Structure formats: structure tokens, C-alpha cells
Image (tube, rainbow, N blue to C red; front, side, top):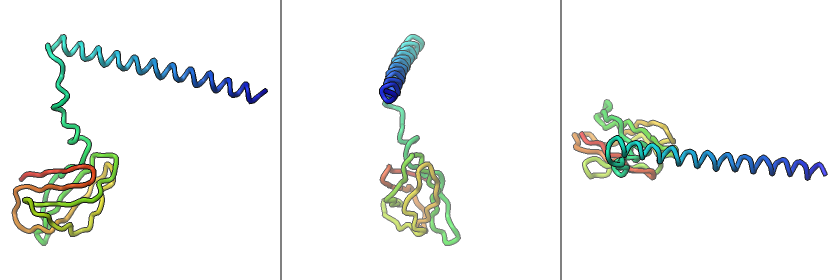
Length: 138
């Protein structure tokens, strides 16, 4: 008998939470539509979401480039994604270069310095990983 009462209480709580969740979802959709309508009434057109670059926010990026005492390139790389960047490879001016300091992955939301075997000047650097590609132009 006590099991039936506890089960019934859990059923009531579950149904209540489901209705609250659906209600909040409907309110959120309504507010988003209201914001789009107000944007249209103020500016006369709807915003173009295809020009928003989400990869810049959620991906991997080369923040800055420097040189060490042996004149090898040092890349300060930031991972803006939640997952680790694995299978990292670097190419400078279209030529694949070796990673000297053996960085194999950059943890999610982490930063790392990658030392690559390139002694001369460069025009651009491309860093590729499992989660994306980062480009750096001089």
C-alpha cells in the first residue's frame, strides 16, 4: 500500500514538472518571436543569421605567433570548444611542419603553446585538428 502511495506521489510530481517544462518552452518561443517581430518593426527587416560565424566562437584559434631562442615558431593556441582538440597538425605556407614539443591534444576550453620546426619567415599558418581548423595570416 505504501509503495502505491509513493508511486502516485512521484507520478503527480512528474506530471507537474512536465507541464512546467512545456509551459516554459512555449514562453521562450513566444518571447523569441516577439523579439523578431520588434526587430522587424524597428529596422524593417529580419536579422540575417547566416553571416554569424559560430566557428570563431566554438573552435580552435591561433591567438599569437612568436619565436623561441632557436628561431622556431611558437604558436599560442586556444581551444574554445568543450571537447579536446586531437590529431593536431600544422602547416606553414602550405608545407606540413613537425611539432617539436609533442603536443598531441589541447583540452577543452584550454590553451597551449605549440613549437613547430620552421625557422624562416612565413605568410600564413594553418593548424588542423579533429574539431576544426585555425588560420593565421601575418
